[in-house]
Image (cartoon, rainbow, N blue to C red; front, top):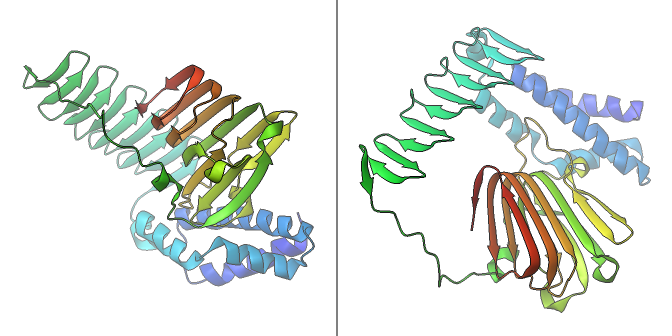
Length: 318
């Protein structure tokens, strides 16, 4: 890391934070911004820019920091509201008012001692169980949804019809995105027999390359343009791997990903998604597909493969 760039980034951040309250959230945000902007500026310096230009471009790419500070203040409170409570942030987690107001740690999240909200290994509970989701099913007031069906006040109800057969799938609409394109990389499909994707927090679409193209195209759309957030794409032999870049803790980053694959690609496809949605559609010549979604949803449409394995830990698939 360049000491000159670190100094320039710190000076610029001072201008944004000098009149802001000293809250734990803003302190964390400033630290996170400094790390990400330093990394981005150093990357730009390695391309030949001088430190001043590299830092200026990193800040310009990132977007409106003032708006981000306002958002964090709105979500986490100012000095007055924060100092009205006893807040502890350490290696064990976050505690507000000795855990009576809020507690977040390795066991779960608890609001008002777990009475207002609780999310842990046992499941989710809101308002003392008025809404509850666990391994037994889902409870919404007097309604329960479990392996036995739908019940109201203990009485079985007719199962709803979720049949979507006949509903047209608009593949053309899936190429449209509302976020700016920040990263595009292309690879000749002739040299690829396996494609592996790993995303921690993103909306991912694997769809056919348009106009009968012979390239695999990786496109990432984000609300904040920072090189450290972009995917790490590498090709080893005939294996192409796409791994999501850095996911910030406080910065509200939204990531939409399109992986364009030629419709006649006959290789293997592995998809791992920790949090977000996955769409796999329009590919009809795949060999082996392995899909794992830890939290989110998956949709498969107009798909053909010799073998398919799907592991949906928490979420749904259709």
